[in-house]
Image 1 (spheres, rainbow, N blue to C red):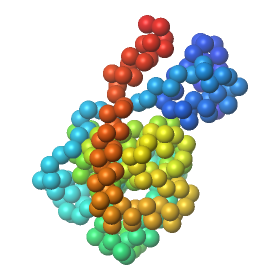
Image 2 (image 1 turned 45 degrees about the vertical axis):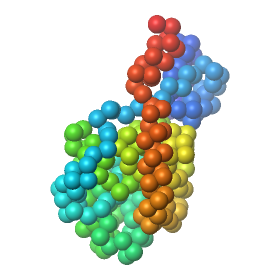
Image 3 (image 1 turned 45 degrees about the horizontal axis):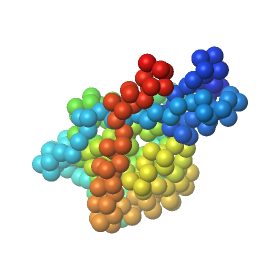
Image 4 (image 1 turned 135 degrees about the vertical axis):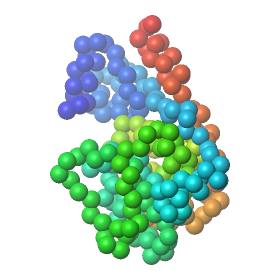
Length: 239
């Protein structure tokens, strides 16, 4: 429905802007319009997202996870964010990594839906609700990795926020996320719990891979800029 409405507006206005090539094609296909009518202009992350000291990271861990390393999800608690499969994958690796926590940051945007938690991992999964940006930047920079596995996404700003912080990204191999990640994330099948668990486990155990992806993420994050996006929007609109 959203893609169809966007296509209708583009037909009326003559040009459209989308934040990823995947989104561009979805709108074009839904509305029967030429992809050339849609300009792809990427989102970016707030510049407050940046690496922090080890001491600051330990302080965040003490506040949120009793000092333990943690996997992080950031986003609305909506079915398309695939949080239930992420929790199920976390359950699969829990016995191998019993001290590890899963921190889920975001507001519940889907009333009536609930997430199933096995009693064995219930005390290892922490829901924070919404966090203000000052605190969220520190949490993002303190995570062992961002585990971001939606099965549909328009852009995926949390991935760029994590990259800005030097935090390793595990992301789903779906819609636009590989496009945004480039070679700076470990990609998994969002519909396969075993593949998600395998990816998490690989990143936990391979410190050199984490270091490589952290470095690539910092490099990749420089590609996304709100200043550049503003210039591109102005150019597309002929301003």
